[in-house]
Length: 169
Length: 443
Image (cartoon, rainbow over all chains, first blue to last red):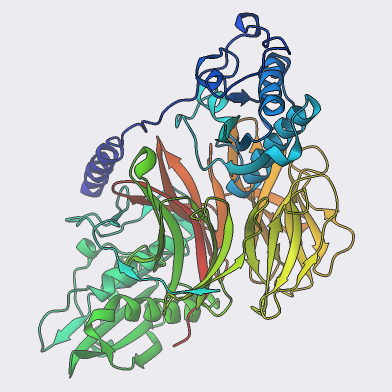
């Protein structure tokens, strides 16, 4: 049946078109470093300054990663939480926006909820470590702002994250 | 707050292609075809003879083609390919029934087009039962503008569909969806309204930030949706003919999401988290009064009203993983209704309330499942996965739309309710997602 040939041709044509899409180029947040490599937060006597946000090895880490459908903060991120909490204490006028994100599995609205829950978890941890609630805000982007767009766990693990964004230093 | 908004036309950005064709022939970039994935043995064979044109300039639209594609997409009919049509009767008295019996056709549609002046044409058509040689329909449609031949064809398809199946057709309806075009910080999101077959796309709203969850008002005049254009999520209601829009939920703190119209169009169920946790509320659009429905530490979102307006289905992870629950529309105790599968999200309800479509996740595979409430909550899958979401019923529940992926790209599928016939809608240069099927249109 000659229709079959036509069907195949059309399908090929379209697959060709679909394959042309490009990979998104977006500045990647620093990958999660193993806990062992992280230096301990600076001693309490040394107060952080805005310059440390660019130079301090701990403060430069601004992303907390999560397990699938989870919002518990993993032990390897406690150090990051501690140094940013100290920065908030040292700089009472500083302010952080916590941007919660999720991987692509599950629906958009549910993932908004999940991203917010992760943002809230980081907010609570920062407060428990000495930050003040008034210095923190949480926004959820759900799965709307992925840093990686492939359909595999490697990519998903990069998207399940809370980004720590200083809106005031 | 009312913000006027420009309406854009969008021919350049919105070339909807369909992959694979049953009636191939020369395929123009804009034309849609049907991808039959099997199980069509039960579909009724019908032939739609090209309509004869009596005078005037040739029409830009082949009415019979549009009707044929509608029938095939429905899964209920299998129309004879145009290339296999050997005779061209224009009226009942010209039909040689023996020919069509030989071709194993149950029904035949013939028609003719007359110039009605002033850019209008009049279309008359007949539906015949081939075996009984009996006329079932003979109707002259009201004169219609040449530019609306697709609309006219969908209306004829609806009437024929109803005559044969007993169910009102839903081809002359519209769909809404969101496209995203561009990369990185240069993405443009557009909320689009198009015909049910993806033709005639029109941009309703544009944003540099994400748009999601478009939902049609029951009268088909407005769309509620979520936009991140202000930085945080906010819910807008936009009139799709005038383009004027209203910001209805924009709490500075937390999520403003998941709008769902009440069946009477006076209220929106929404998911808000300014109270500290994501909870369901019902917003009265006239008074702007919010009534809170849920109180717990779980994620409660994706509300959708039962057709009688008495209850609301929604997604909650109060049992550990997301499942579908039902709660009285005035608040009260929520009952879990989904028990099959690791997780179930984003319910959609058929017009009669009997079928609940949802996204069911098992491991890394997310498929569209339909739970039949009239069959002891039996569940069937209508999509193969692995990352399917956003089910939306046609107003007659004969078909659904859902979102999926083709490689890195978001695509839509239109699928018959039995899952047997699927059609893919693809944007030539971007993602398409968040489909929502509109209500019946009023003539």
